[in-house]
Amino acid sequence: MPDASTASVSPTANIGVVGLAVMGSNLARNLASREGNTVAVFNRSYEKTETLVTEHPEAGFVPASTYEEFAAALQKPRTAIIMVKAGGPTDAVIDELMRVFEPGDIIIDGGNSLFTDTIRREKAVREAGFNFVGMGVSGGEEGALLGPSLMPGGPDEAWVTLGPILRSIAAVAEGEPCVTHVGHDGAGHFVKMVHNGIEYADMQLIAEAYDLIRRGTGKTPAEIADVFAEWNRGELESYLIEITAEVLRQNDAATGRPLVDVIVDEAGAKGTGAWTVQTALDLGVPVSGIAEATFARSLSSHREQRDVSGALPGPSDDAFTVPDADAFIEQVRLALYASKIVAYSQGFDEIRAGAAQYGWTIDLGAISRIWRGGCIIRAQFLNRIADAYAAEPELPVLLSAPYFVEALGRAQAAWRDIVQIAAGAGIPAPAFSSSLAYYDGLRAERLPAALIQGQRDFFGAHTYRRTDKPGTFHTLWSGDRTEIEAEDTH
Ligand code: NBP
Image (cartoon, rainbow, N blue to C red):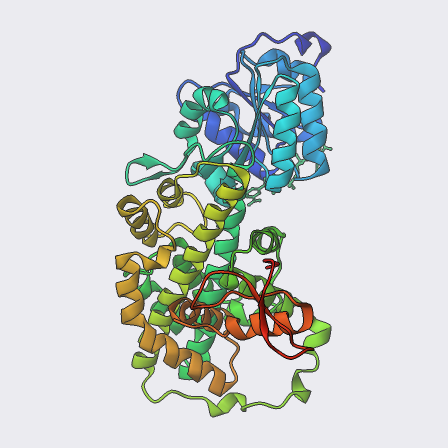
């Protein structure tokens, strides 16, 4: 603990960080490295503060050992970024800051909070006279240190103070800082949640592509790394494709085997994929690619269920080889690109639906631009999304933009072949197949939903509408089966 005489610090810092685990300490270092910033730092257990300050004297941190000291170190309006574990810890820190801060001060939650918590907190903190900003931070520890993609929500008033600071620490993509004021209250955390959902889908699609290539061509992980490195020079160029090549090229020092063969095949998750899907279900938005990716992780991690694998009949593993490896790899690339368009399109749909539900004005083109740098899903491809929304801001579904229609048209034959090949060979490709099914669902002039409406009317008198005249109808199924006009009970 510092000497008690240091307790009366003068307000020299223009920004503070609470929570100095990996994300908070890196974000604090990033802030301190920018011209004009002096950063106050506080952590519940003082050792972390001490370590950070000692290891980084160049940062000129102002350490605080109590919330009172932290408040005293900050110029007004005090601005503090909380980087602690989401949930109860975030509420605890907000309460402490409200105790020592004054009305008009700005409290920012940079953790991975659920957007509905952010809406609740924003209301409570605002009613107490403070500004509250829920901010999505993407890019992991390296992003936090060198430049993350930042998705702040909260009031316009806070953005005036916060905007210049956040612009100074964000990643830069094509000359633009990867930060925008996403919208009010929980908008920032909502968009960050969907970002993570899209990340799940993208990773699953890449994993399916790898699996198909490996099982179909017999190439080694190192050889497949070359394929991904090549793909990274084209329209699939992205951070996730780039790191996939790195992971596949890595050999395990202990066994000499490819590392990917040594890693247990059970994917973990911290819950943001599930939040994205749960929220989409509530909003009635079909994010099937994200859902399949989330469920694929669940399936992988249920080892006790997977132990039945030997008992389930299917094509034999070694019965599958493709005659022309290069042609097959190109088909997989096209299937991956098409499925990726679907996943992003679904994610942007969810953002649009969330904005409508919660009263946010969200510029979808700006969201695609701030994801071009710093974050995990950064990709060339996001420029195409920005172009699509620039040309038509009210685009009803992203994949209907001319660029994507052309790309899907170019890919669809290969996409269908790959899904068929995977099914025939007994190779699970849930995200590839569900993306294609979604695409064909959108394409279909008539869907069998008409039959579902008939069934619903049969067992529950839920009524239906007709194609040939307005109104709502019910068939007297248990009577003489004539049709009557009915109240709409859809
Ligand atoms: P953790 O999520 O592991 O949280 C550890 C921090 O929370 C420590 O500073 C700890 O203080 C503090 N804390 C806890 Br736990 N309970 C507290 C309480 N009741 N009061 C005050 N402080 C408390 O840290 P992280 O991995 O650096 O992540 C920080 C936030 O950023 C999280 O919300 C995370 O979801 C989010 N995020 C993480 C990533 C990533 O790649 N890791 C990316 C984007 C966002 P202590 O030292 O005293 O225990």
